[in-house]
Length: 365
Image (cartoon, rainbow, N blue to C red; front, side, top):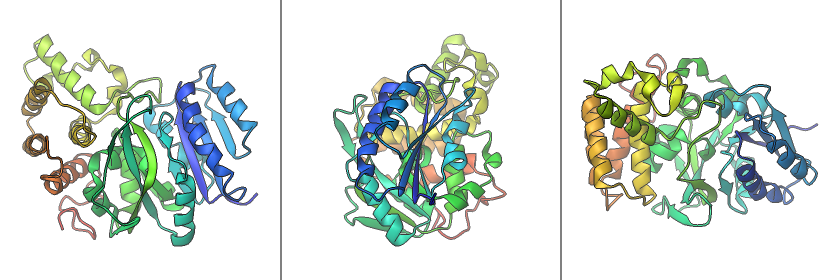
């Protein structure tokens, strides 16, 4: 059998209805392409009774849909990295199981990678409500060209925003070989192994941003992709600090020694605390980009949390994000530069990425 040009990998955990919606937005697009161009591979991490039935019904309609059901649920990070194990295509695209894609999206991706052979291409993301009925925000309206080229992945993400393009798998279509070569063990204590594998594999590669409508991303959701559920990092971080206040812990570091008190459960044992604190900043900024309201009470809680955490660079970044409320592009370049420096500093191996970031495409250029 010939190798597919593109493998679309969908890790799923007990969301048969949402998965059906996602597949319903993808599979009809495959009939427009030559047979064997694209495969769709669902990797089931949930062990529920409903998902196999959804897949069986859809497989009867589409020969390109493949399915693997794990014998036991694996951690979130392992599930997200399923593309390295199951995708057989020359290019890999990992999608969340509860989002959807626009009509024509697959053909647009296939056309670009077939003609341009990029190492990595980033896709447009729209913020939608939890029912995928209302678009809440379209980003990157300032980019007018259908294809926008950047000298490196950090350059691209600095411009596009570190939140969605740092933490959400669905935004990147990547060449399989360099992605598989990334040393993911170096990031085993992070919440975002996938993102760091991308940065390692494509740090100095030219990166394309494809502006056509692509992903409908649900902004109000949790991430239950494994038995140990992990809530959105913003919610988790604030909940942690609120719990610390209510339980009378003297300081943030003392609280961190009592992880069993955290409402998001023992999933946090897999997280590096700095990663959680850093990613919360980018999540907060993306909430503003999506037009979501941050109440005065929430802002105060965030400020108290970061004062308690005590990292000056994070405190400064939070102040810049707060300043952007009401005019998100007012200091976007400064916010993105600051988030880039913090996220890389707190999550990436300094053996691979020196602290001065003195490589081509540096975020300090």
